[in-house]
Image 1: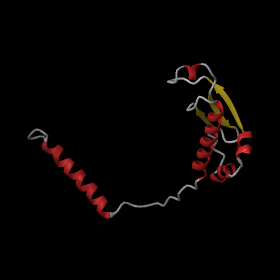
Image 2: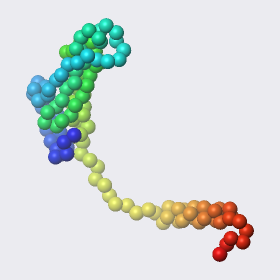
Image 3: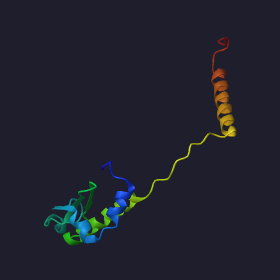
Image 4: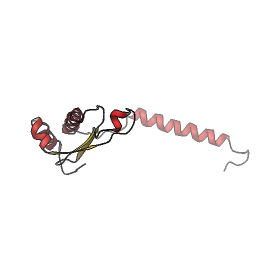
Length: 125
């Protein structure tokens, strides 16, 4: 993943037409592994596609058709671009409430007393 891209850059790639997005990608076909028998083993039907400008890489081996797998890869790239194009939520600094601080300190005190009760008699300072 490239770190110099912002969510605006991903949104710009997302707005590209499908053919333009496909031109920016490098596709590679290979033998799919796993279940599927002869349909998987005899043809280079699985597709690995990389969107060069962003570095997003996806793999599709769902179909026995290389063309359908290429289309599925483009859908996956679009979905990843959409995910990265979302503007991140702004974070706001918060403080714990007084009640939560009190609860935490009470629990620490109870735990301390429990450990104190486990000591041998006469070990108190």
